[in-house]
Length: 317
Image (cartoon, rainbow, N blue to C red):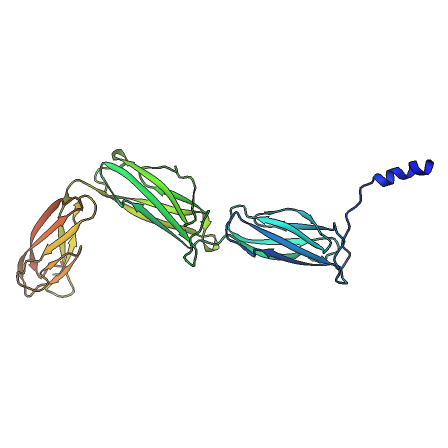
């Protein structure tokens, strides 16, 4: 009876975890070796072998650590000496150095796992690209891609604007399976200053996102259109004495403007043009009457007629 009582405490004691002997070797691998999403996971596998090549005892503790993301601190080896832990991204991009060690190992086993594919391009596509001076709504679409042009899903982007109010209020928007993130911009007449002709909207990949952690950004200039267009232009001397460079100064209108130039040389080749800022070489010096017609998307038009002297005085004389 006395012997039985003495043995009972020994039977109830916790059994200590086995310890790997000195000279134990660890091999480490990751599956997948590269995590596409910054919040994705990879299984880290460690094989622990005794100096004679046999597995360490089951239950031997393998300790894990990482300098990016998170990983469980301890996992136990199975009958084959294999221990597994899960590396989880925490939304940051970069290269995680994962380490594994156990008693009896002189140097930890390490490997690197790329977390997140770096973005190399973001493209901002507003619709429409112009608004009237009374204000309006612009739908913003940003497309985020990697170096191969593949869309990046589940990434954060941040829209910003010089005027108006964003539906997101500047918070992070996530890209979908097509690499697209969207926002809406509302602009009121009071948001625009008198005579304002444009303002800038921007988008940036959240948290840098580019190679080496650099910013990936894009901007777009939204045009503010007034009521009717107003045609106007100026001239400069071109590359030769009789060549004239026409500088379009037209403003206003709804949407895009179309340009119709008449250089005042009836019957001469290339007497007309539809370019925004054309050049024209006159046959001889003299005075010419030049006409510019502009038409906007609402079919509103305006005309500017000016007399110019060829050669144009460039102010050098």
